[in-house]
Image 1 (cartoon, rainbow over the protein chains, first blue to last red):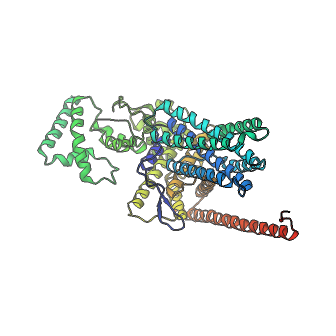
Image 2: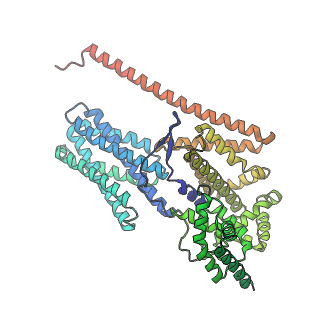
Image 3: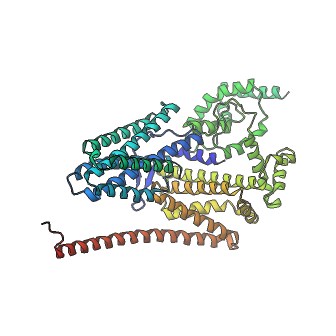
Length: 217
Length: 344
């Protein structure tokens, strides 16, 4: 019977008007007529899509905080503009996922405050190792994220490529940009940091754990 | 014999269709479903025409249950917006609604349509029995007796209560689900009105108050026995289900109130509303004022508390930021004064 409520909601879900509480003027969340994510046909599909969107949102949020940490330390150095540019792209990704989550009534992960702090600390501490440390962190994180997006793309393609075309497009676009960041990091002497192999694997282990947890909590 | 009667009736309807005078009215009545608030009658009429012809032919050909079941099919429609696909005129209420609801194909149930309308799933049958059982709750309380009496009104033997493993829990959970769906319908309707510009959007506090009040008012007919229902919901094996229903309810109310947050606010808002809802429900149980005025006043005050707390939190945050900036400025000044800032 919970389905009845969900069904009733899904019928009106395309009506997306966010009321600005202060000015009481209805603001359109997005002006597109279609939604990136198809309306789920059953609760299984809804769960799967929820998990995918939740963990992607958490990932972009974490990446945002990592770059913020790096900027806090290296913001005024020579690599400042480069990191700022990568950060701006991450901000765009996060905004896109915020929109998608709101449209599809997906619960954000409850660990967001934790990723907030952890991301900032990771970014700041690797940046304290210098520009190479920050780049190494970027390489590690972006590699993890790209791997993760790739596995999501594979999963969605296996299920039904036509149904998820728009979502796949979005994820592919983001994955390409993350790969760009990864390559940028490599170009800027990420591998010259002492303990590169250790640092990279430690960060990637952390990312994998974060992804696992964010899918579920 | 029954088939013959049905054939005659269908034949008359078909003749009405061809004559075009009295036909449209009867067809309109038979085919157009209840919740067509947005679609004007004329377009649904034309759609009804197009749908009615093949449907009537099917009716003429296949063996259909007697039309007295249309009253119960309304209950099913009432409970599950998207019923299974059907192609008959007798279950036309459901049919038109299911087609409208299924255009974005949002049904969680199987849409294969192979089952046909004379078979209903066990779930639907259980739902019908439980809905009928609600009438007997004031008499028997939330118990198997009520379910048995409900089954009897539908013409089934009282032994069909064997279907319900959870007994009274099933009845209470079914009632809760029904109330939640009703509330969602009302909120969706209001939302549509606002979108169409026919109504003013309410302030969040007012919206929450109205939504919670509407929802709690659904308990009024059963208020005498509601403590029993609440204690049933608190049984360990019912807790997961009742929490799930509660969280769905709160999520729906916030969604229609306009909440689109994707950070911790998502959790804090829902936690706050859950607290408000539960405490107000408890107050309602022991409220003896006329039309539960005390309860609604309590609700008002709690919502006001939450609103105040939210604005206080915002103030604390901005004050904190200002203080931090002040401290940073002071530290920077000190560094300058002590000469630590100079690079040599």
